[in-house]
Length: 265
Image 1: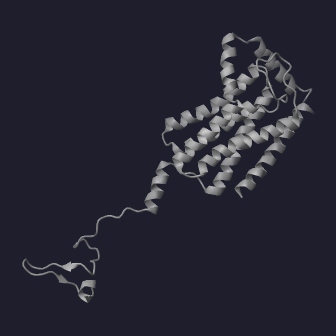
Image 2 (image 1 turned 90 degrees about the horizontal axis):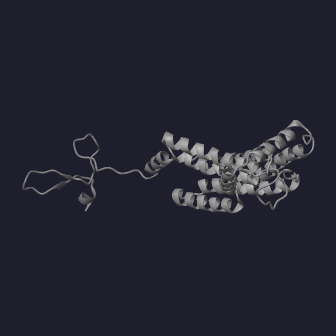
Image 3 (image 1 turned 180 degrees about the vertical axis):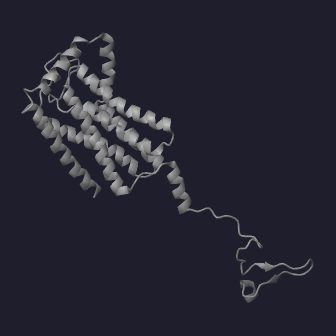
């Protein structure tokens, strides 16, 4: 059923984002939305600097396909080793894979031309909507979801959220700066990546139940494997064992209670 849910999610996401892309290339092609796209691109081109070119190159690399594959494999393997279950690895891998397949299908169906400005990066896919780099950066937030379920310290949760938001923003700005995507491409890519994370979270939660952090996991372990304390002592109000020997005076042999295993012998 998990596989069925993922396939249904893929179809739904593809249909929605394809519709958004066709709006940009059709009814909205000659409106203020697309004109604003072009104005923002021209502004970035006019304000390019040597330092900006270098930093945006690094920002753009964070969303490349090779980097995405490395992040997905590494994060999935680490989650599997730490949690020793499939819930967290499936959330991370599923979100990134769902985003990847949806992006490839959407960009093929929409076919929006690349921006008509000088580009700083060569492109192999001529379709512009949505931004696959930005979508990948947003899909990385699946890792943040796993960490937020594990972390309890406020500062750690804040840092996790800030990093999860910063990565797609840096990637998206870099892609616009370098002239390979329109701002609406970037917004569409960010929304696509976040949607894939949210959908996979719901699927995983439905399949495996809510996640548990270290505190909840420890409590569950204590419930499943309770620690047995010492045997009750005489005089503490607890029931006495039937086969326990009866105390005698010094020099006398121990007497066994009637009905015990030893008295039967």
